[in-house]
Image 1: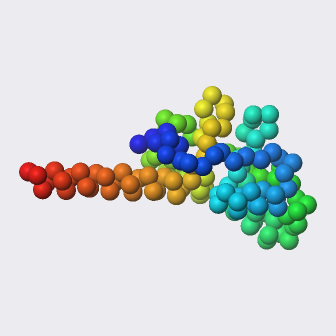
Image 2: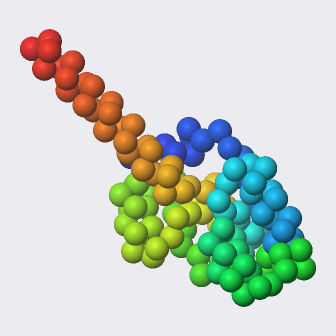
Image 3: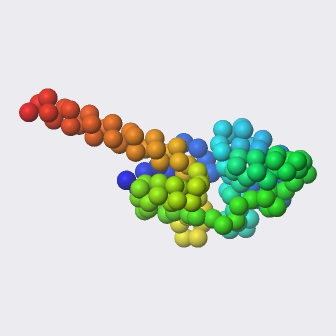
Length: 142
């Protein structure tokens, strides 16, 4: 299975902010959409990602004010991305090896989506369930 499978089944929009957004505003947006990370995009260019982990490590633990801090100052800029045709196994390996939970999906130098470790795991589990059901049906009918 490919990343395309996940994005085709996702109902959520791609939620983004620019680097001048306050951390507080970004957290509020993440809460509204029940998401764990945002892509930072300016002039249609992917600049970084901001996650709950960034907030915990770079704001909360350092005693900084989230209403005064800007996303550009704490976002993660060393990005790992995937494309629509990357396999879910590739995504899992990347997430495991790099200790990340979210991967921006990029096509033609444009961010078109984001997948999470939960998206990958749930998609694989559903595919395995379908395979098991198919095999059980095949065995019963043989």
